[in-house]
Image (tube, rainbow, N blue to C red; front, top):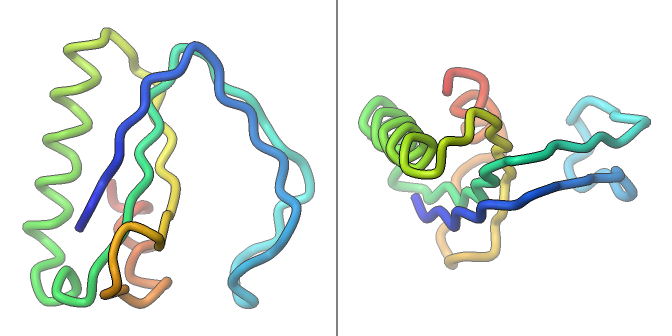
Length: 98
């Protein structure tokens, strides 16, 4: 797994294009303030070690949240940080558990 963390005073999103056909449709956007945004790239090998990957992601988020004093977290799938990619459903399930 590869992750880029950004701390933002504000983060706004507006869904425009559905990139994964079986994903739920989201009609309206939203906004967050004082937020940590984690752009997460899941790799094929992560599917074999799902528990370890989940634990590592959560520990990193908790550490950064404590360091910055932010309790707002956005997890965003970002499949552009490497060539190996996990199944989209795996990453969704990881996000749901985290």
